[in-house]
Image (cartoon, rainbow over the protein chains, first blue to last red):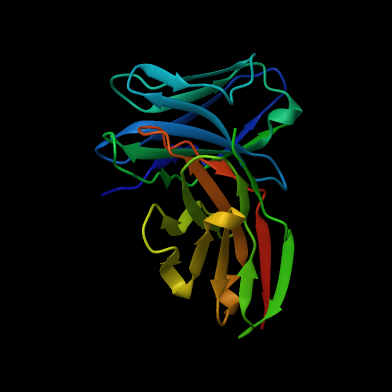
Amino acid sequence: NAGVMQNPRHLVRRRGQEARLRCSPMKGHSHVYWYRQLPEEGLKFMVYLQKENIIDESGMPKERFSAEFPKEGPSILRIQQVVRGDSAAYFCASSPTSSKGSNTEAFFGQGTRLTVV
Amino acid sequence: AQSVSQHNHHVILSEAASLELGCNYSYGGTVNLFWYVQYPGQHLQLLLKYFSGDPLVKGIKGFEAEFIKSKFSFNLRKPSVQWSDTAEYFCAVNALNFGNEKLTFGTGTRLTIIP
């Protein structure tokens, strides 16, 4: 069973370009979470998605950032008009469907390291 | 909203020394608690987790953690560290909101083991 797959592993973009980060959850997992890790900081929650739905986007910057998890294909985190401050590691995690009363854990991918030059 | 504090930013130990990394959280409700490890250039790996039951939790690689509800703490321990334990360690909390495993992380503790 393959783990959470993220690509690319490393992405370099010039200021003003767009960055698209992909995340394929573990087989059977329908919940996807995106986190951002700035240098010397812990991970910060960005967004939680289920298939075709954004459930919680309380950690997403108001502008330039968007996320989707279509019915088919990977989840995409999109950053438009990137700036130097967007340079970070972006991690995706997935978890299976959890029914009320159960506890599950999230499994992390290896991350995409975005560098804006 | 919940928050997590890891007071030790960088810990340096010699091999075979005992380890304790502090983690405190603030949240009034029921929580799930986690410790993750991140080796250089790699993804986060789960060391151990607490959902309910015995507050002393044993994880992989000889790590354990104790949940003390009255102190809002979940400290990580290992009796004898190895050079291969050099990594960054993150404590995380999930407020028990069924169906949402959103995690709040501490800022991490960098552990350096000297051979």
